[in-house]
Amino acid sequence: MELTDRSAAWREELRKAMKNKERTEITRVKMNELDGEYRSHNYEEVNQGLNKDQALLEAKRCLDCPNPSCVTGCPVSINIPSFIKNIERGAFLEAAQVLKMTSALPAVCGRVCPQERQCESQCIHLKMGKKAVAIGYLERFAADYERESGSISIPEIATPNGIKIGVVGSGPSGLSFAGDMAKKGYDVTVFEALHEIGGVLKYGIPEFRLPNFIVDVEIGNLEKMGVKFIKDCIVGKTISFEDLKEQGFKGLFVASGAGLPNFMGIKGENLIGIMSSNEYLTRINLMGAAKDQFDTPMLKGKRVAVIGGGNTAMDSVRTAKRLGAELAMIVYRRSEEEMPARIEEVKHAKEEGIEFRTLHNPIEYYGDEKGRVKQMLLQKMELGEADASGRRKPVAIEGATELIDVDTVIVSVGVSPNPLIPNSIPGLEVSKKGTIIVNDNLQSAIPMIFAGGDIVRGGATVILAMGDGRKAAASMDEFLKKK
Image 1 (tube, one colour):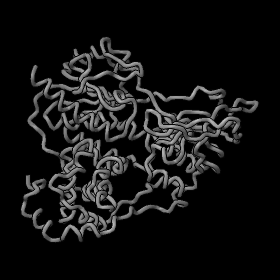
Image 2 (image 1 turned 180 degrees about the vertical axis):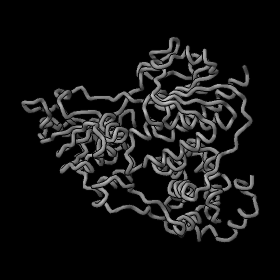
Image 3 (image 1 turned 60 degrees about the vertical axis):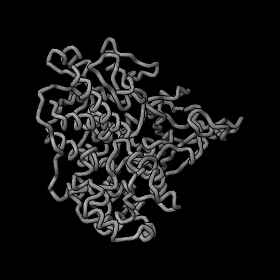
Image 4 (image 1 turned 90 degrees about the vertical axis):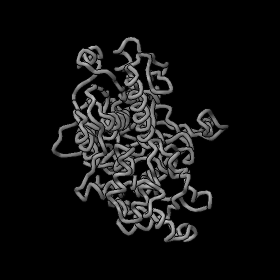
């Protein structure tokens, strides 16, 4: 195809136009951002995107490698050099088309994917001691340009085959699967338990990081491709697996996520004012608790502690700051180096005045006479030998504790799979952790049911969940063609 053919005349001309040494000398672009103090009081998107000149210059840094290692680092196998080279020649709409060949959510991925640990970590620039090409920034640029132009493209759709496929959950894995199956000509229906489509993209990620309208545009694209969405429908309660089979569904992809929050099981954890990050973010992001026109109740603490060091913890503590917290702090049992959160998220949090108490771990909470949390006892930690995660294990320093005044605590120490689907479909094999057991093709013990994302992984990134969706679509298509 002309847009992706490395040997196309236009592409060869681009490579000749500039020597590789000149390309590597270009300084990596910096993302345009809102001021830290300003943004810490509102929900405007922090990253403002690149302008045309920045995108054109950054695209020139790509060396258009004959064997691009960046593609192997992408869980959905985006043809990265092709979309970047289209940007370099000013063909921004064509760049967006290349992205959509493999990604159902390019504007989302360009914002929230940890590119620094995936595609960008494989960039050849790093081997030369240079900074990686800003692949994520360029992905966002192309997707945003297409949306703003009003010329939104739809990928090529195969002739409809009339085969009905169901999808449980409208998060990144379910949406990615639905998009790929629609391209293959299947009749796809997505069942969402909540009143909004988008899953964790809507309830878990704040608008200052991923605006809801961006998610809605991506969902609208899927609808134009023929995907149907049914909200307020809980598979396993509202409708059963047997009901779906009776309605003629020939395949089911379970992407119900990991919506069950984990707690630490320490004394005082049931006090008023202590909640999971899932509940906290859902009330605000999905149920409008931060907006005056909504009646959703929400505790807006003045001294807020968020327990954990992942992206969800960063989202929670930065949200607390925006809700008026005078002190918003991260409490994390390891050092900052071990934090799983994106470097960008940590940087943004610090710029917004978030306090970091690393090498601390809560061991008890104390309440007032009304049962609301008022203090937490922190155990000071030090790092020992590496554990199974590859990170150094936190070890308590005997006798070293600290008492801190707090009025709200948000626990963000991981999630477990939603147990509803595994419990409602007899015959599914489930692990001790509650994840659905699948084979290498993401097929479950019930042949027509495939599963992916957090319900299989137990908690992962948006892009890994999307990668599962793509893989499951290819596997299910192959399975159904053999029947």
